[in-house]
Image (cartoon, rainbow, N blue to C red):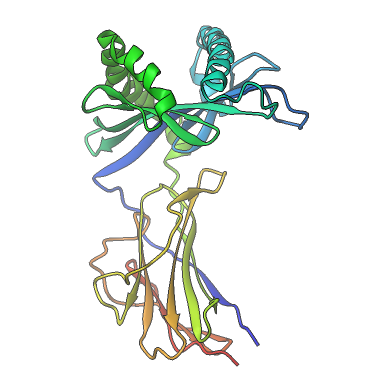
Length: 334
């Protein structure tokens, strides 16, 4: 018999502002080589994402850039949305021309299949306690059929071509230094300026901190006599979180932990999972270490919360620690 055990705790703590917070602003443009008969799928779409939250949207059917957040609608003039609509219409035409060029270059123009060209560009920045905001990193990259095609190296101000078919475009764009200077300037300055503005417009909604709900799950692994221990934190905001699966409360996480990284939930909150496989015969204690800014200072060690698993019975001890541990003990198969 196989058991799948889990326990869920919503941690309470004092919300404290940390010295810095990381934020992101990205724009994603997606073009299809031909229309598809699927609801909600358009030949061309564009959207803006602030901290993984959709703030504006455009598609080739409605042909108008619209706000996705009420504070974007309230804070920006009609002229902003009109200019944005014209810009998206221009990009739609650019994509229509260039996806056909790429299909010829890839020898896909006779395939009859649907092909996808995508452009993602934007920046990440950190806000400091004094209200200033500093550039951290920038992204300007193109993909074709889900694979990297061309990307901008912000440090060298050169385009990087991971496939041979992208080399002609790389050479053409690198031969126009002013284009690369503009791209670098946009990523490091203009993008950060817009990011700062949008953060101020949506400050009330974006700064509503949410504590993580932490779930510890144990299930049988594919390998005989092994189990998979998974720690999941979900529903938290802001994005930054620390998580480790540790043995015997060591200060280092276990090796070979697997994770898909921090992912958006779609409601402005995030989730993170980490898993590790361990022998069923392992008698050591394993803990899931989670730290988030909605908890107090991590130096507080008292009131550790234990979740002890004995077979398929879950026993919960009392106590909350901002540097929270979830204990896994002696999970066994029947």
